[in-house]
Length: 138
Image (cartoon, rainbow, N blue to C red; front, side, top):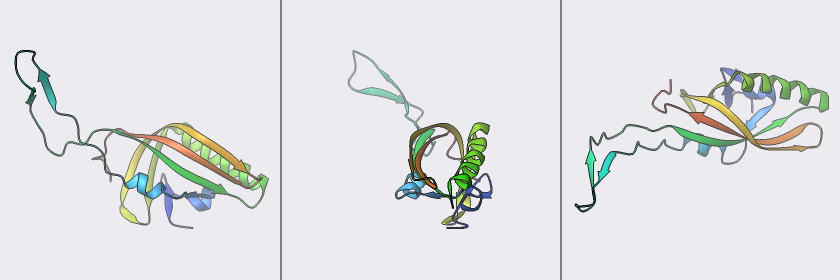
């Protein structure tokens, strides 16, 4: 678990007891959509006129990524949870993984869509994150 996921450059498991849930990596790595071309529809012509098709221009995206926190006990959980909330309150969340060591995703935290606490030392949640520029992955 250690060294698999990094939040703002910090090992997420060590600092927050945090790991990706099943499907989390796939959601993170899902390619960003292309921007819609500028088009114009006219009632007297068939179809639409497309202006300035630019191939490969990426559009923003919103991603929901499932995570979990594991802690030794309730006190440890609350400490790790508070530290994670402080990062989220900052609004800027950069995520990298060991599977793509040269890629850093830059997100803005939107909300926590789902939060479930299982026992005192474990919780499962889904973060909704906004990536304004998917081409900026450094």
